[in-house]
Length: 224
Image 1 (tube, one colour):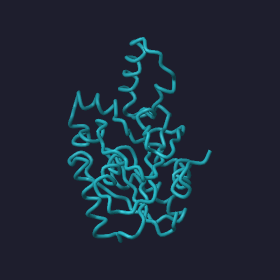
Image 2: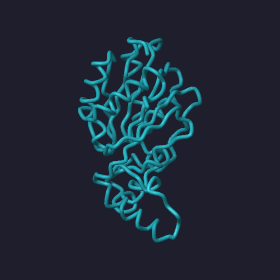
Image 3: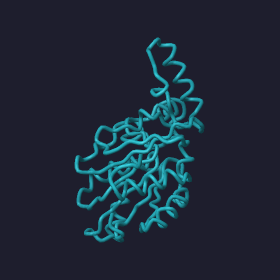
């Protein structure tokens, strides 16, 4: 990684830029030039939010400078939409943290019960229909398997339904971070996938997650 790469940090649903501050500080200590991108996850859809990121870059970033992207949860789907729809930017490497690349069972339940809680972030994003990842993009995916979080009741309920169905299920298939299943984070186009013992939100303040994120941005793979 070039020291001159700019690193864009993107938060998730129901969050604000400050949630990425601990990660930003740790990345700055590794020599990264960071910017915390904020967006309205409830009021605006994924297309609007990736378009605004593009507009900010047009006003504040030189197109010849490489961009690295690190995003939490829904933010990772914005990364996919942004990269797909604005191919003029030079992308270095990307890392997503707890992003439901295949859609979110938890969001499905919430959408059915109270759509306003997920707002416009469901369609073309949390419903599993985000833009495909271009082949040339170097993406590392970190998933958590510590099952504590606000989505835990929905996922426990869903796990019980799966067990009652009689389908043979391994603990790996039922693993989640309290909000997102590990299986939902997997993307065939990704360069590497790493499971860590963290919760969905806890991964944002975890030193190990930050270290692994920096390692991937520098080397294109996680450290094992």
